[in-house]
Length: 318
Image (tube, rainbow, N blue to C red):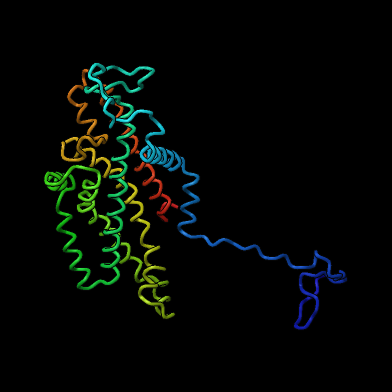
């Protein structure tokens, strides 16, 4: 029979009557294991590790980042040397020595494709960084402060929102020098309103939650609440859109360079290579195929990563 525990008894209700208590290790309570607090970010990271779409996309993105940062590791030649192009090699097809063949100027397509990754990736990363910083900061300010500040910033944003990205980029780039940095600045100037709206909407959804009210009741200041509570919970959709938009900005740079108002020679980009190859692509399709494939793979990789991050950060999909 099991004894009934009363106040002051030395025997608990888990002890059987008559069982000796000799202080052995078996009688001592087991220490509680520390449980890791679950959060949106830890759950998302766990999901991403098991997501094959994210793993493939992240691998491709990592490869493109390494190629753009260290192109000399993947090709011994340089497209900027005086002997890089020879007219006698014009439009030669791919071979064992030259995998991608030669373009119309007699330049090695493989070497140019590898080196062109740098400008294309720079435009995508720099533009996305500027867009997230500017749009995210203004959206956070508008959503948190509200009132006249929100109204003024929203009306100011609508002015830029009315300008199409490519059309506005064409107009502005026609008066600026064509290089990766100016293209990034122009695209960021026209692209930040999207992030502004997303951040503002996310802040408005989170600013009146219970944890924000509790922080105010405990005496937390505005800056602390913004950094510790609002921003971590509102930034998730911004990260998702930024990851997807990175591929979009690489495509926009390629379109501007294809039209002749983006990156200009002697600089190289995939869009510029596609533009040069479009003249003779029926005669020599390999000149167009390889830079176009590199551009498509890179854009697809960033979109895959963005889609996977979106699925991981969306609680409705759990």
